[in-house]
Image (cartoon, rainbow, N blue to C red; front, top):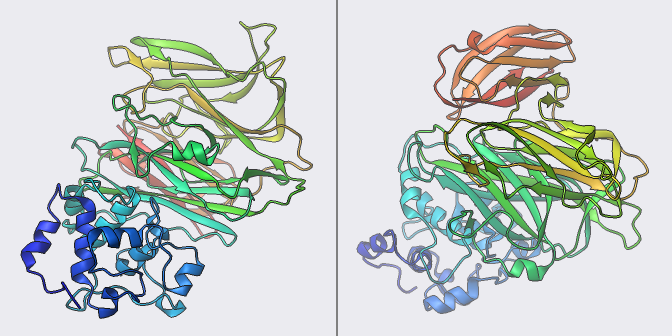
Length: 556
């Protein structure tokens, strides 16, 4: 075995900030593997780790693992952009994260050890994970080792998002972790894009897309590239959204297929599905902000997709999506209302609406969506969506919850003739910032955006499938964000005594009370739980013998 007992100074220099990232990865592989088979052509990972940097790189990228179990799963030694389908990372992962460890009992081999027989340290594993997620590039400094060191050197570091169970029929895709600096630091708000190749083998029908995210998440958008050429036009690795840098959320030829502002299950109506081809590329768009956590925040999004092979002559109706965005938005100081038309108005088709939601940033005060009669362009027809109404709890609010706007499901679905009618939104803001605000991607900018899911033909049976979560109760609060004076509304279908708790981002309970819920909407004052809350994000959780629900609360 060669090149194992190198001086410790070499290892120190390998992890200096500014070092070429692949050099760091190569330094780990060529110096820290204690098994001599890792330095032979027959090693179970593949390739010789004591070969030249160029040859090791060539053997790793999209290489097939020598381990038959890992190869049968579809893993590559290193799959560009996808650490959780990279066998090399799972060999290195050890106990850091359940997603990046080998299943020894299933025959995937043992975890890689260093020269003393210990697992690689967490920072080394994280460097490799971030290198792969950032495009597994051979040159360039693609990993911020400084923020990774700050996170792993903190004995009170924030925990990773709890991993949800994988779907039985489908796939789990994870975007993260991405690390945000401590509250009060620069760049505590980021929006990311990451290209993901499904590599399905068959054309599929997607019937569920369920999203799980950190409490400090702003939104997650799931785009699908129109073809592989459109995907190839976008670079590998994480792209950071920036108007000044030229990268936007909407770059590339792609279509919206789902959107989340909180944890939610998108369970499509019976007889409908999203149609994805075997070579589908997704674009994962994740917007997060560290509102008040004193430590570096690791942010994750898990996407569980349930699907089945699509027959050649399928009777399933395709579910489509539309995202409508006013990129010319211009808001002067003060209160104002603006209209915006769906640019697809005038198309010679009928759209059967199933789901609809809206989106602004912090100055948004109202958002309604109407049917628009093209014969009377200055008039609004039937209201499709009321931004003040909480469709999840059947509660008519008085403020627009811009952080997590309500989502409306149409049951039965609503037809809109896009030729003679169309769709138009009415949005109001109160710009209290004292200067002009325009369209932008941070919460300091503004948006006038809505999206909906629809079919072009009427499915045989349409209705909303039951969500997998508890359906006996729901919880919300208003106004949200608030200054600490808020009303908590718990809509219960049962009479039951429950525990209501308030939890901060560090997982600490900062308030709790017991209360008897009645079969109706129950209202409580936030001050009854905690009358001295610091600014930040909290989770309201209600739990009883049969009732369990939670929602996000923001205190300014």
